Length: 107
Length: 123
Image 1 (spheres, rainbow over the protein chains, first blue to last red):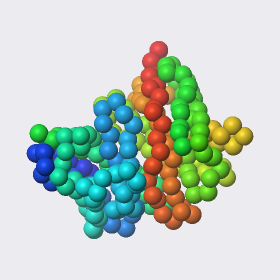
Image 2: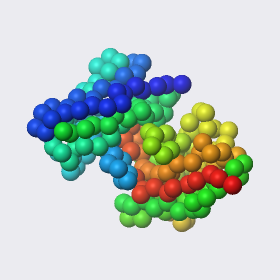
Image 3: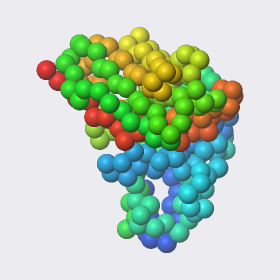
Image 4: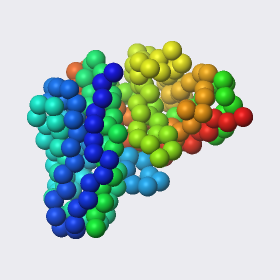
């Protein structure tokens, strides 16, 4: 079965740039989305089709995908960005697969 | 668009878990919208269970396929999940959600989520 690997945790200082990676076989050939989940809340879609933002998502959230790695970048990280982040890949063979999640600490 | 899960919060081992998702502010028959179930065990990550299109076409996670049934009721604007032969490993928050596809050639993410229903499997 298809697997996506994320680092369990990432730390960043307020105002700095946070980078969260997601790796999977031929990930660049699949459709990649990213989600933010805060404790006790449902996930929120923050990026889709590699680097498209839904309305209401700040432009400090960007992403890229190349080869086997997708990267979520949060520029000017704010304390309210502290959350779990999940990558997710899709193609018509694997359907929907989520990464294990990365806990982003802003401190 | 809002999604709301409903169903028993406690299910006995070996029995069948049943949940319903009610869609409001939109229609389950909307083109290119697929209706999904996703779960999250306590303290763990997200796991896609499967999805359905209003035509009745279903897509399931391969490891759950023999136990899962997702169906849609267009007259009630609802879709449902049945998971049989449950064990403690099926204890999770179950989310109903909307996926956006374009003719199943693209995937634009899971853009609407319900609040989640906590289901515990225990005798």
